[in-house]
Amino acid sequence: MTSAEPLAAATLTITEVAARTGLSADTLRYYEKADLISPVRRSAGGQRRYAADDMAWIEFLLRLRDTGMSIAGMQRFAELRRGGDATVAERLALLTAHRRRLTERIQRLQANGTALDEKMSYYRALLEET
Image 1 (cartoon, rainbow, N blue to C red):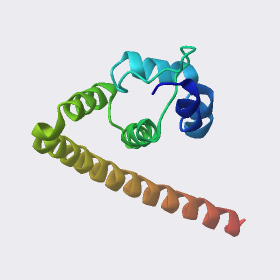
Image 2: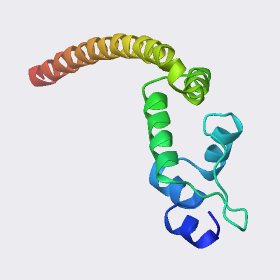
Image 3: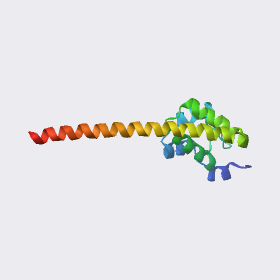
Image 4: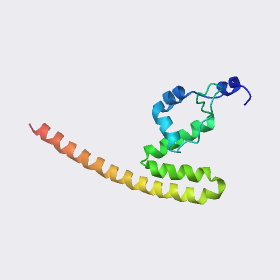
């Protein structure tokens, strides 16, 4: 980009990204330092400017985090992503393994939820008896 104005018009500041994602500005900087996010473009004044593709990637990282992927796993996926099309099979394998672990976790959570429901029903019945 030759001027800061077109860049600013199509991008978001770190504050705007933080507000949209729920991540703090410090976390966004950490993600960049930890190589989860590629170095973000800067305005002429040096301010980080996040483009739509940066936002899409951050949103995917949040999905990985929210589904229990470790920072190390996210770093590995980000590294593979930077490797381009040659790493598609490895990325698929990583996501497949992660999805399997997520499915197992969901099953455990559902079983635990059922156990809680049964215990609550037991206590409700006790209260009704009194």
